[in-house]
Amino acid sequence: MTTIDWIVCFGFIGYMVWDGLKRVGETKSLAGYYTGNRRIPWWAAGLSVMGTQASAITIIGTSSQAHEQGMGFVQTYFGLPFAMIVLSIFMVPLYRSRALLTAYEYLEGRFGPETRALASLVFLSSRCMQLAIALGAPAVALSAIFGMPTTASLFLIGGLATLYTMVGGVAAAIWTDVKQMTVIIFGMLAVLVILLWDLLPHFSLSKLLEVAGAAGKLNAVAVVPDSTDFLPRSAVAAAAGIGLPSFWEQKYNLWSGLFGGFFLHLAYFGCDFSQAQRILTSKNKHDSRFALLLSAFVKVPMQTLILSVGVLIWLFYAVHGSPMLFKPEHLDAAKTPQYAAQVAAAQQQYDAAQARRRERMQALAALPGGPTSDPALLHDYQAAVAEVAGIRKQARELFAVGATAEERKSSADDTNFVFVRYILDNLPHALLGLVIAAIFAAAMASSSAELNALSAAAVNDGYKRWIARGKSEAHYVLVGRLATLAFGMFASSVGMFMLGGGSLIENINIMGSFFYGSLLGVFALAMLVRRARRWAGAIGLVAGMATVAVVHNTLKIEFLWYNVVGCLAVLVVGILVSCFERAPRPSATAS
Amino acid sequence: MTPSDAPEPPPPLGSWCRFYWLVALVHIAVVTVLFLVTRLFQLPMGHP
Image (cartoon, chains in turn orange, green):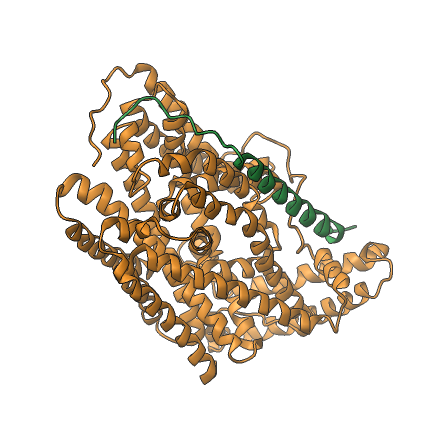
């Protein structure tokens, strides 16, 4: 990072903070603080929907994941457009027909205060933990790269986001999301162009695709599942390696993306208030629909762009030679006498394997009939690709520390450092500053939307509903600002302990999947099951989460399916409870 | 807000219906293109 990079980086961050702070005039009432007085243009709300989902994790985690595992992750989003259509038909009219300040107010009108309180608590607890990951993980990655203390990086991101959200409310969150999304798209396109600029003199575009595809990196759509055994294995059998993996264990394929992803995004955009809040901020229900449907058009192409950058980084390193270690703590440990000899030996093997991979890649690209015209060479190339990956994995595992297998795996994982290492070493000045600023800004902007949503749920569903009714708007806005501050401090502090490795974006989705399906189930119960009354919602919600917990601990099923399990469990239990329910309808209680 | 045990039916979609079809069809087209492009080049690892 040069001076010009730092100027661009801090200039952009400063601009974002100033832009958030200046929205203070729009926050004099609760409607202003939490819905932007319902005057946000649809395109800004739509970009904010994507910006809140994107976060720093999207840039760092997704591209690095493609470097390691290819493009399969894009399938997670295949169900998203269908979810947006369903939400536009059912949820938008429901939310926009009343002057709601949180999504969970609707549940009180339908089931009673218990279900509203419970759903809001589920949102508050799960979103708070996800916010801590979203703040902590990129802060750790960035601080390690720049050599600054983790606390400084964490509180720079968390503190600034909390500051401007506390002052500017949801309008600040939305307008900073807009700028963040613009910079992310511009930055990733610029990185893509720079990578192609470097690679195209070596290989034509079709040859690049051939060598990437032959290395298994273009696995964007897996139509045929790895297994058609639909009986899930028990978690114990899977841990012991007994039996073959079932259909439910393949993390990404077309079917898990379409069905599991459909339920995940239905729940995330419709029932997680950090996203559902956008439906409340547009001028009318038509604008709310446009805001949601913007993601339906843009999300899959955007994720494809980011994953393509990851694959191109892999190709770049395959052509020019890749570092064996990316994680700064691995690089530091490698210099110590304890590891120096082992690392030097591994490096020697790694360099030789890389040379073999490069040589076979060039030979493969030179085949006029494509990679399959010489099966022996293709086999050798794939063996070299696997050898390089294997040596790198062994080298990382030299430094694995921790009491449990999971901790050692996390310690050895350097997925989140690949993209940052690439841009630090290869991007031109000023552009590097802008991309680093985009990563910081993405962490701040998505955190700010989540902070405002957490504050809205805490104040409207908790404080105003149960503790202090009938106070002035100014009083509630003040409490809302204090709640934002408290959540910001809490998430930043807890973020210090969310330092695990692994793919950040997966960790966020996995955590959400424990709760989202059940939240979706309770909304579906409210809308679809006429006879469901007071206790059906609350008991169904608890049963849904309990079912997901039991399934997680007993069966080997990938996380996208948890959303389906949770939703169906709530519906089944809710319908059963409603059969026995004889309690009178709840009295009018919502404020 | 008045509690109710009767869920409200969604209002008529009108011209939105055509737009939803457009969204779905564009998405299916994008996924199909992605599938075809990657399918052309993707080879299973451990190719004989």
